[in-house]
Image (cartoon, rainbow, N blue to C red; front, side, top):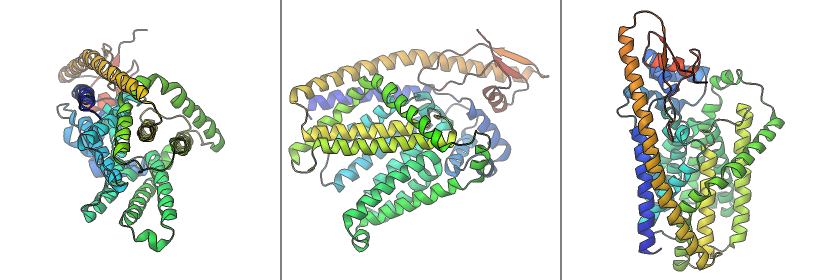
Amino acid sequence: MTKQNTLLYTLILLLFVALFTMLCFQSRLATDDYWYIWNVNKYGIVKCVGSQYMGWCGRYVSEFMRYVLYRNLQINQTWYFLFPLTSIILLVCGVQKALGGITNYLHFSIPLVQKWLASLSFSALLFFLSIDKGECWFWYNALNDYLLCIVAFVWGVGFLFQTQYVLASYFGIIVCMIYTGGGSEVFSAIFSLIATFYLIICYRKAGSFSAFVSSTINKKLVVFYFALTLAFLVVVVAPGNYARASLLPPSNFFYSFVIATKSCIKFIVLFVPPQLPYIIAFLVLFLLIGKGIKVKHPNLFAPTFQFFLFRLTMFFTLVIFIFFFVIAYLMVEAGPARVWLLGSFLLTMYLCLVAFYAGYSEVLKTKIINALTILSFGFGISFMLFHLINQYSIVTKYSSALDNRNEFLIETNKTITKDTLIELAPLPSCGMLYSSEIQADTNHFTNKALRLGYDLKFHVIVENKK
């Protein structure tokens, strides 16, 4: 990759970093955040986690992390921006570590600058391929279960392929897999499936059990697999899962196929095509990296691009359908946007692998690659500048209005002596953030959560503008 290309991609990704950082600073507490703050203040961390495990869900690790966060930061908004910001930093660093370990395992290397650019591009593409960016990336309550579950898995893969500090890498694998397995039952189920496939491939490649266990990476893979599986089983057996399931309609195995099929169509056919500019903006980099590796290692990969694409597409299609089927069976519906983040992660991995191998296999002519590169720069710079300017205008108004509303609630709470009803003006658009808006119904869970979080002596509703 030329120096000019490197500088241009650096500019695009710096604009993305600026956009994401600005959104982190403007993010605010919302809906369930308030309820968790009230709950942990009333019962304490240990009792809250135990109560959730026994009465609502088995995600013991993410629940614990969630309550630690709320217990320490409370209702004060000052330091919450660090949570989503730290999450994406961990993701980028995790991808970089995993990328370095995997390339070293396959006996080639990517220049350090390109490796960091690839890690940032992967994270940026995942961001723009997310169904609801606010719910997936800036809602504090959801980060523990979903995004950080992906982050832990990526770091676990990095430790798996780490060749130095072997004992420390075992510890890293166990910690990461405990979080992955105990963070989200849907995510850990799919990650366990992927780990099972890889374990079978490695065993078949070894040819015998003695040959399999003689490899250090295979030993680490066994630890990786069992740590993930055991942590996942602790989630599965939680009494809270069954208590929550009793509140949902009965699961229907065959109808879940219908829901999963509709979800796949909605995701692949309806959602992905409009994201093509972002795919081009952040994916061409992997094409160029693959082309550069071909020059240094012309005989590194034997399979043709057509064979690789067919096998990878079949595997991706199988895993993505199982993913949507698991959601449909457990929730008896397509599931919320935050759960679909794993689908976006799988799609991002698939696209990056295809682009890299296309570049390595040289299936595209130089003119086409040059044209795609120009499009990539055009889309990347223009879209990042547009979002940076547009979102700043939107989210600063939103955060300012919400801060003023909350200050009004705090001051009013000091003077109100009896139960009454306060009507609030609607909040402006939250843009790419997650909205903290309440409803025109005091019984709505968002209204109740806000009242508990601020310990209000009165009820609140939002003005109905129908």
